[in-house]
Image 1 (cartoon, rainbow, N blue to C red):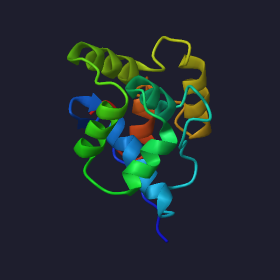
Image 2: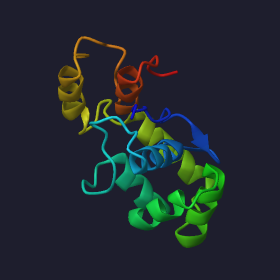
Image 3: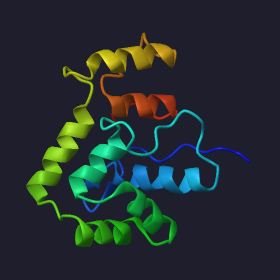
Image 4: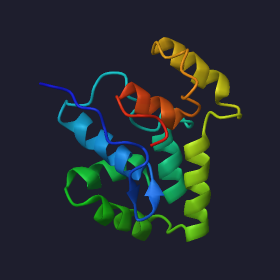
Amino acid sequence: MQTQNPCSDYIQTKGLIYFARMLDKIRLYAVGRLAEGYFVGVEDPTFFDARCTRFLGVNYDDLVKRTLEGGSDDEILEWCFARGRRPSEEEIGIWNAFLSKRGWRDEASADLEAAKKRSGLGDRDDIQTWIDLHDAEEGRTPGK
């Protein structure tokens, strides 16, 4: 079966970045189409999936179950809001800023540089954040 990359972290669901990518990874993984090497789940609290489910106040395994039942990303995010918490516009803005800058001049910078080198992208100055790395690894222009 042919594998597929998930959508960009920048895709927004009700203003929230990354959520659509997390659901995309859940769906692709469930049918065996997620390319090898993707982090899925919450076993490491620094994984974006773990951060996102904590931000929304929902259990990751419950979210997987709900996602695989079907529905749009918007519907599943509303389900999260009903079972966890509904962040304010300001909180969503803070979340988006945090995630979109992760790896740039913070405690995740060294890990990002190591990951760039492992991917053969160590010489790419345009890759300054984890989201940039995801985009570059998946053939998209970082930051767009």
